[in-house]
Amino acid sequence: MKGLTAAFLVWTLLSLEGGSSQAWPTHTACKDGGLEVLYQSCDPLQDFGFSVDQCSRHLKSNLSIRFGMILREDIKELFLDVSLFSEGLSILSYSYPICEEDLPKFSFCGRKRGEQIYYAGPVNNPGFDIPKGEYQVLLKLYNKNNPMVACANATVICS
Ligand SMILES: *[C@@H]1O[C@H](CO)[C@@H](O)[C@H](O)[C@H]1NC(C)=O
Ligand SMILES: *[C@@H]1O[C@H](CO)[C@@H](O)[C@H](O)[C@H]1NC(C)=O
Image (cartoon, rainbow, N blue to C red):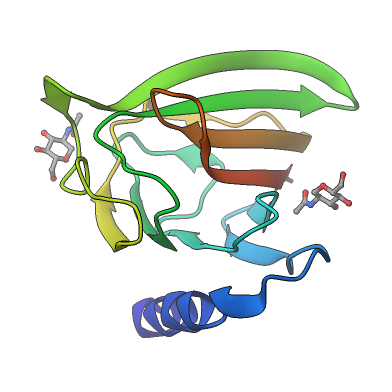
């Protein structure tokens, strides 16, 4: 399973050169334990690889993720905006600093535009049970001056 995931990430990184204006393919970030997470890049310029190691609707704290992309911008500072929707209604939206100049939370903080990053490790998330249902999630990564670093829309199906 882990080998497959790594192969998928490499494949994703190798197929970034598309550059077309068509929609990027839908990828499966995880599918197991009553939870399915599908995502699609909404950055017109590139796709990226992402997967979650432990897939379960009983979300553990400190989930391990894998993430690979080529940086469009420097990420000395990096912020994540998350918006959660259910049946078209916004139910949650928040911003989260990932890299700050004085507080680089991850090893990739400070990398430069054009570099390829690959992260495999924990994210400091709370553990909780995902209520049954289907959710849409919009994720945007951007740096201090606001240019987009990555963008994804995801569908979370919890049964
Ligand atoms: C992403 O958004 C597009 C456009 O709204 C939608 O067609 C697609 O199904 C979404 N993909 C996922 C994985 O949610
Ligand atoms: C999360 O994992 C990191 C690294 O494995 C560890 O240092 C940290 O204590 C963990 N946090 C929690 C809440 O388990």
